Length: 473
Image 1: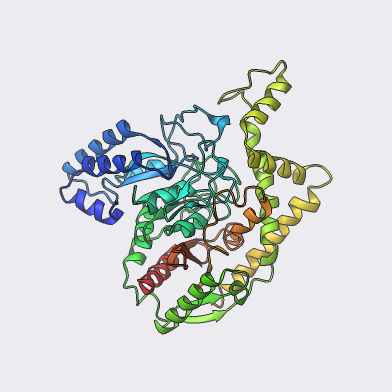
Image 2: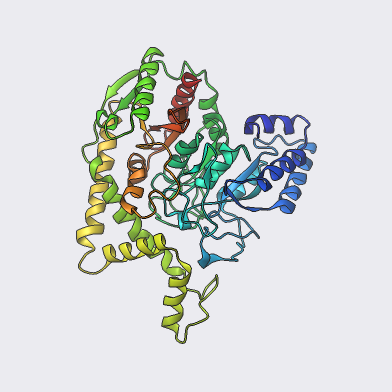
């Protein structure tokens, strides 16, 4: 079992060696039996660890010195295979680092491998990967969640204390809830998307999965910041670690916490009970519980799947067997090369979303679907802005139910999509949100609670998360 990122960094800065920490993590990654890790980059990781040891020996103090980190397979790592867990990118080796990866290395972290995911981040169970499913470390017959299921499972299994994921509609937070880890989706633009293989460009965001909010804050501090290579990145910066290091109780006193009465309905009793217990504990700790409403939230899932599939259809048009990746060997014409490569190499769920997205963007339907969804998105953003005039953070369940069984929802796309019913709103509004482990159900399946804050208020979010986490212990 790995130690926290904070303790590893302190040890390496204090004289322990990054090589020893990384070698131990590599052994854990090789022994993984959950399907969380799809590639282990042992030689390059040890070389990176030696570089970290040399930097520390030269007098540098590195915030993530020697911390082993796993990277979701849709985030580019220089000279390493990056496939988004799709056969259409089989064998592709990235020529550059994503900005988030580059910044992790600058902070002294060591990339030890790639984690499993739903193909092109399209899924809620980590079952659509070309490498096979990821199993939940808490219950091997259950899914790890998706699409960042491999990253969540790797942290939960103790392979590494930190992993990067991406979140388009809940893909960091939902698997974090299923696996019992902390998962943070930052404000849209807080972390550069340069080097992230695009799914929905107005929704995607890179973020950390960790053991606790303090490690998430440490990772966010390393990867956040403006990037000239990403025009949507924002320059506004904060000392996230200061918020996570504050006294937990002090962070809750006087905090106004918004709750939706409707979120107590439609969830499994165990989750409703944990949410009620959290509200009671927060009240006892000096927080104020305020009932709020998002009038247009009921349209969020439909709105999201119009916008996300439309953007996916556009983004995935580049995968044609010509520019990179394998191509069909049975094509006689250029048109056949395009169509057969895509048919042979894309999985069922990716095809479904491309077809849906192509439809909503097509002539005669664009105004009725995509444009209307953008109008609803604007209304939802206004709802959040109004809600945050009455509260500082919003608390609710991350998921309607704990992790479901492998294969249970593969033939029912609608039920699979509804797994993200509580997380989608944060992506549409571009606000930061975090899933925090808060107990288990009668079957010892992890339960996650969901915190949301206004745009660029990650400090407030992390402060509330640390306080709530302390109440759970």
